[in-house]
Image 1: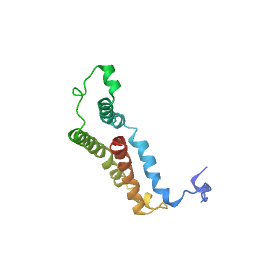
Image 2 (image 1 turned 120 degrees about the vertical axis):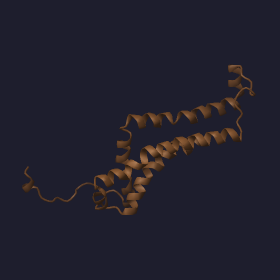
Image 3 (image 1 turned 180 degrees about the horizontal axis):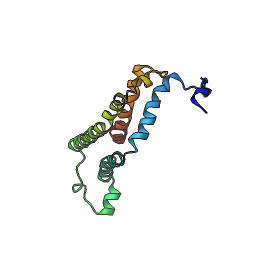
Image 4 (image 1 turned 90 degrees about the vertical axis):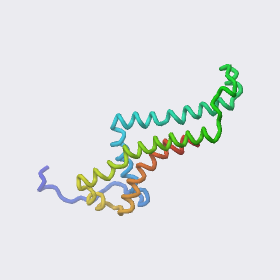
Length: 150
């Protein structure tokens, strides 16, 4: 069909609710972020530290597992305030690098390609744009920091 023959047609699909329109931005951003093999590997490796800490806590408090492995409770790493301080510091460092990998490219791509007018002509406001862009980093940071810490 030639360009001259095209005419305006109203969108016939179902409209999304107003409160969830900002979620379109993270949905497409996650697809772009996880295309990077470096980021995908880093994201997967970021779950190793909480897993190791969970295993250490489990071993420290499970007498049967210690008996099977013939370990003494004193030989296992003590679970105290210092243990959790190290856990939080390592998770914070991992979170910093994740934010450093993901955060800057979210807005810089839009500014480089002059895409902000395209976003803002859609049916959501500037604040929803900002919330959508922030939710990308917040959700990724949540999955590697406080969710494994639960």
